[in-house]
Image (cartoon, rainbow, N blue to C red; front, side, top):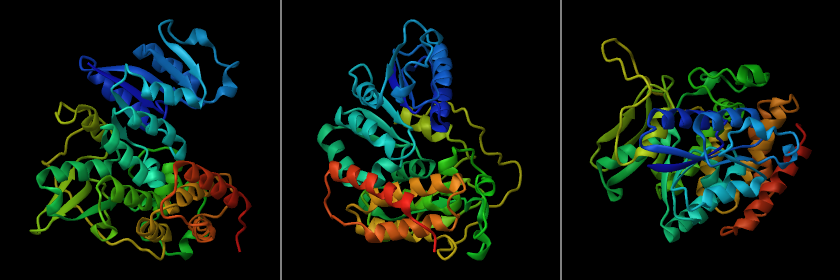
Length: 383
């Protein structure tokens, strides 16, 4: 029986993970769940799964939380540090890291340091601290399994050959709600339009990242560290149907792809059951009907965030932490109507250029730059 902690259990990744655990109750036990502020939803999850721990990371809510809403066997904990505590607990062997943004890094770090099996749904962990994370995993014996649909697809396709036989990986992108738009078309984009993703149902931050294609920029950086690739070995292609989740091209010219209808429960289950495959929850492909799969190159002029991702992956060092923090802060300003859609990538680029670059930063330095970049975005003004 796998003992599982889900960090960020009330988000889209977290709720999908709980669906998988519920469907495989004979093999999986939910031991810990965490949320930042959504304590009522956390209590409902605790009533269903009866975990040992439930963490509300926003300690300011301690006096407001009704502890009687939780089952008696669930210990309710408060504060960010409690996420690290449960992630490292001896009773837990598998941790799903689903906290959005850099906020998920400390919990992931604690789980990796404890040598657990970690399902990485938080791409920012590797974007911010890729070399440090991979070095820590090697030293602790932790197993990192990707949960992002694109990186899970690559991981699955890599089973067809050895690392030395890989020519390149191809990340697929839906293109978001503005596929085919010109730079001029994107000048007056509203949050409502940007949140209308044509394929995936995700949280607001990730949905905006898809609209700017910053999510693909971050995934490109993540793929570099996770699969130990050079930037020249990573390509991006727009695939609006979101059926081919990514591909691996081998040196002999063979291309191995992973296909499935868009449903995050599949890559989550693959991470939870690896190396075994089990009956899935998501609907299978319907091969009895005609359909088409199309691919096109991304437009780097209309979506400069992707170009930034390529540059940051090449430079490494402190660049990933700065780009990620600047983007999170810029998206927050856009969602409140305080920043134009086209300003998101522009502001991130300017903050990147103005930071003091270090090629081999410490974790403390990365957290310091994370704070600095957010403050710079708060002060940034459109020309």
